[in-house]
Length: 196
Image (cartoon, rainbow, N blue to C red; front, top):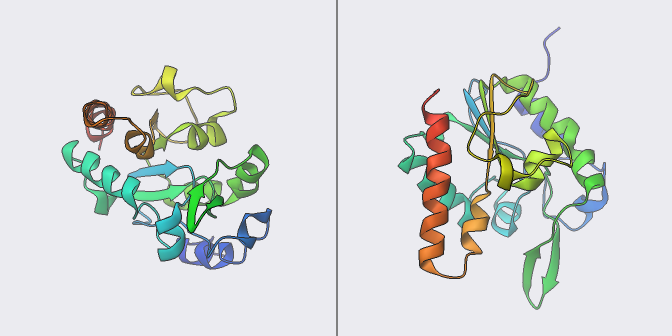
């Protein structure tokens, strides 16, 4: 009997009610990319744009990820992108919906979906973008600030690394700081490019 496919997992995840995040989200945002991708990139959760469009990494942070991947010589069309949490957690600020960090319980409710994506894609390289993604798979004690930009010991993939989430660049106070953080992200992603 054949195992699950990304298509069957995406359909099943669309009805997920494992935690309460689905109640205020527009839709489940499942991962996208080739089932044969050599590299998988995992972020925290969909943002406002992703929630509305139904695709991962299509908002401002996604555009920064695209830029960083291009500068690091990693072809975005060949990688699988997903998030640790599949529904957008947000708080209202006027008419805007602002990101709210998912709880540990919400992260663990989504973990079976992430594990299923890993099992189907079986990437050689796993890139964890930000603390939530890294901690959801490597444990609460993991610190991106201490461990970023190097290979980590893990059974999740042949090569596992963690770096900042592109949204951290957007939160920098000035353009010089944003440029420095973008360059640091690109350097971290060149580690990935070297093994693809």
